[in-house]
Image (tube, rainbow, N blue to C red; front, top):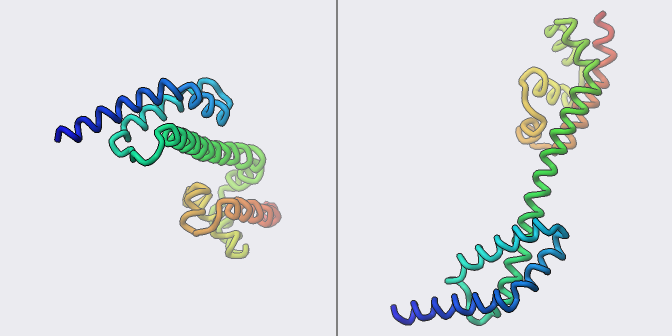
Length: 178
């Protein structure tokens, strides 16, 4: 028990010395990766917290400096993954807002104005199945593009393309309802 406590104190002392000696270099390394000072400061703090929490699991055979830098690159990778996921989310939102509410409002307004859901559904039956299913799910079952993609087990970009092509094929048929 005493040896374990002594070992922990030794590790903590080594950790503090390592931070004093290599902390500045670690910060500059993180900054060189992310190229944004406030973000680098945040990630540096995350690295120090993660390293301190994981200190009991630190293996003596590795150098603490290398261990800290490895945690640093992993924190940067985590940030990039999170940033990429957020970017995809916002791109999808922008796509839905721009393309489906602005560009295609004319077709949607025509369909709504006619108030002939039965006729439109019958007209949808004339479309090939690959276009009919996403259109029905999107407009009549109020599913999002992501939900359609997951339930149909097809890529999101394919769902978007099929909806666009289905609407293009539907447009002349709906125009004939007038």
